[in-house]
Image (cartoon, rainbow, N blue to C red):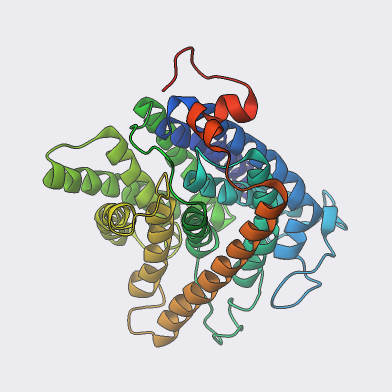
Length: 399
């Protein structure tokens, strides 16, 4: 084991957990109406707890076990069976690798929360999130990061899919699951109110930005120049996408909003995530510049043209951003523009994972909804999930 690598991944693990708690909770919480803010906090917090247990029980083994096949890792490492403080994964303790990957398993289903806020039962959130992480997310992790069918030597031959920190594994899966749920759930009864606290949104986005250094930089799994470059290009893409989103918003509407510029930040972060280990600063500048406009246009398409109430634009920002960044690896990355195998692996993996995610999400929504209920009743939706589902209010006066 290398001490510097271990120290860095310990820090990166804390940073990625910080992205969900409290970063994502504040980002999403500020975007909903005041009567639903605590429900969003509760969703993010409870998901973090449940995914921890599920990842320990079987999730890690499904993703990174070595007793399965190209489709899953088996159950040999359930409850960290055979993993001790002395077990090694690369240059770090395996238990630390488990913990680092656990924080990814936490934030991925938490991202989906943005699609169904203000109208979904807490029971559905918990059961769906747990099953989805185990049956959708963990297998995809194995396919790409665990030596499975989409990695090198898999169905695409010597050149497998390249996804440095989660463009396919995290953002495409969460984004498509969010879109499926939004379509199946239907729109909110009242969509007229603006975000109740843009300040929360900005603070949450800032925490996500800082935490993303661990998300992308930590995915190098070493304290070296590769980690430093991944961190640097992550920051450049986020900053550039923030500005292009704000500029495009001003061109279209005459004003640049705080919620807009920080949403651009998240678009830039999601887009650079898969490519952060394969590109340099100039490529990051281009990726971020395009992402700020591309994801904003995707928001308009889904909200206005398709009339899908993906409440907090999970697919438009995370899904579209992650897919875009994944394709940019073949364009800008080390595999090169002219490498047909690289394009085939990237596009093919996006399609395979996309179809798998849509099918699994659809089936789980139907199954879980039949047992615990999918949507809250009209009265609870009107009075707010804070009071109706949790018996609490964030503020004395709510709207």
